[in-house]
Image 1 (tube, helix red, strand yellow):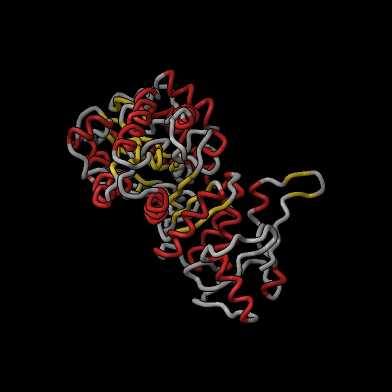
Image 2: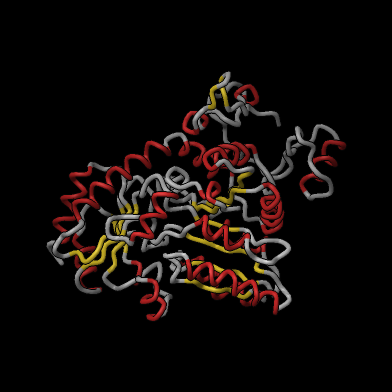
Length: 428
């Protein structure tokens, strides 16, 4: 299918927020509709038997696609016009060769890791991470013969670099490879940053024929405030449910990155059937049009709230990415790697679970829910919810105490949000 893919006017390169309004879509192909309709269909008709043969040859990897050849429409488990438009636009933000969309963030993560690893391999990952990610690495992958190594003391860089080197040696002794280095930065829920350039350098220094890809979960800051591909990453993962979807009304995920690696991920997605549906893709395409406005406003609100909360007598610490209370090393990583702190941060209250629960139960505007990145403000207690399966030792190692409350700041009036936090803190 031929679609509109111009990224410039004359010598001027167009900005991502401009491209979100029409890139990858030609109204002439849809009766002149200014917005792409929903292609709510399971299968697509071939113009000829020869077309069907050609489409399947490319889809199943029987031959390489010609440079100017579009992937023919076959079946919505493989591709769909709504998904192709969405994937084209997602790739713009991060400067990726290719983007793929999945039925959830966990579908994107699990499909990607399955595509990269095989029995006897080793995967290194940073902690803390999203609870579902840790469950996959700690409990599922070992059943499949893939050893995983969790690295918690990696905020200063040396711990992760050492783990990469040691894991490569372990993998070799097992007859496998270091299959991937998986990084979540900022970490959920502590906002710890990982130095991507240092991790990429450690990977390049390995004596391994096929260097493992550096895979980055960019959900907290991407795609506006952090560009991992520019700092040595090979693949980026997103829960599109969060900031990209932004309205708390859909579930989806994405993987973006290098063309050769994306080919392997696409193969696994096709066979596992973890692709998202046309209606969700349509909703996400709608959301991309306002992504920059929503993320800018929510970050502006969060920065203001952080400045007012810091030093509050009932708050022990405010954990924002690269913030004033983080170490000089963390602040240096932030300066190199990020263009903004985003709008999700955590606070440590003076006390424990009882104090945290009193604050959470007193909130009136912040809603008690475990997601983030929506237009509405949310508050959660990671220790008893998203990270409740951590052992007490793992919680202590990762800094997830019973007194920690995570806040996802939305686009409401910041004075109203501040008033809500102040009255809730009075209950502590």
